[in-house]
Length: 220
Image 1 (cartoon, helix red, strand yellow):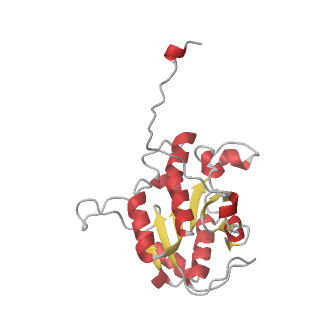
Image 2: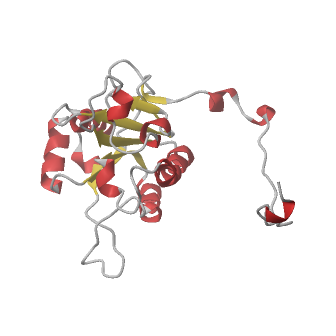
Image 3: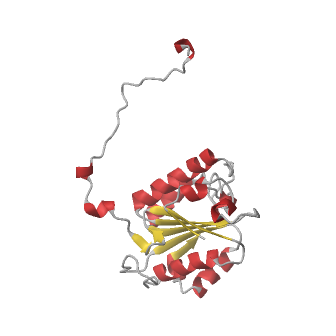
């Protein structure tokens, strides 16, 4: 070992760790708040994974339907005292189809919004939205108080990341984990399965393992 060849670690005296002690955390903070009991938590990211035509999107829309219509989810969860708002990013359907499916799922579509694009330079000609637009998505959540975000399918919005790189996927999902935690909202990522012949369902999820390892809940 040659110390002279060791990597140099930059020292910055102005940086310091911010610590949270166990005594600073209330018992309520230690509990997971479930939008849908033991299935979809608030404050975290959840994955719905499955083959095509298996109802992943419809399950997400069903949750949106109950959330926006002030109806409790089957099996329990946090009490919904008033209709809550839902934001949908859908890469496979027109907004008309999305709103129709939401309505068929019992949603109050007045409490639902579909992302049409992101205004970069010209608001009249929005560009396609992607996961890199976290700042714009966060701003929309803060302004409209969305309680559920559905991203369907998530791979279609991950245009700037190598979906097979575990580290890039983690970096891509990290700001959404932070957004979910900061706003105490549920974020549902819809993911297709690949064609791998494996009995281990986790190996069949498209992309790197981080897609199911990072989220708090993964349903197949």
